[in-house]
Length: 357
Image (cartoon, rainbow, N blue to C red; front, side, top):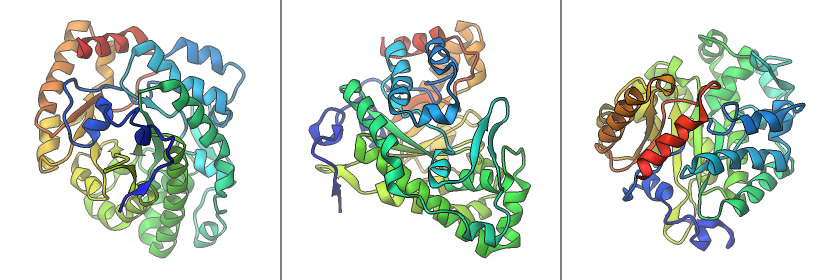
């Protein structure tokens, strides 16, 4: 059963219901392949760097006017078919009261890593009222976007759990994977907590006006299929439950799941209950669609490294991506990960213009 969105929601008013992005995510291939880029809002844009001077990353995410402006910048510059809400994976942790900061040159760092059952039990609940800056930023953004849809964004439970246990970035996530097997009860409790804060975070964005929602699992590629299926996928499903049946008319808000290095997990990621699966650059889209049974739209998967290649090389590459994307019911052109910080913004604009021509 569909739970109705607010009457003013862009899907309810029809502003974004027939957009190329929403149609593609819903399995209806539009006349033109929609395109947007993960991390399109951020360090590659000079206007972003100018705006961020003197403001710490997490402070920028929680300043509604600034977060909205950063979200809108790539839409103005590139003419992409969607905005992606400017936030950070650890924002729900911070809003819950976890001591976390973004250290320049390092990434998220936690003051007190979560390593024991007692640590998990001490994690604070996320007060929905703390999400007011998020809802405000989304509302401001949606009012400016017109018919361009906004995609809500959240980190998947495993990625949040990995940061919590490791205390910061890690190459192999040994501590997190170790806890998974050494104390399964503590691990399951941690994943439940992460799923709850993720679900509340996503729901706030969707109710405020996001027309789609993407769950981003940065570190799931380090897991075996067995571990992902038994110890991670249930929490990812739980994280999506609060937004799963939100919609207008006969259309629900489409859900997207993306992970890095997750070529062996694609079908399991689909099976948590999403409409579209994002694919990184490691496998071709036609092979990804084959692994997915040819039943769901795909998103991706330009290799970010090729953004610095000569234009003929890049053009040949994304033409190939577009061709292979025809193997799926629908395709949203994107990168296989985020925009590198040193990317020339004009290259992204040129890709968008090429696809639109």
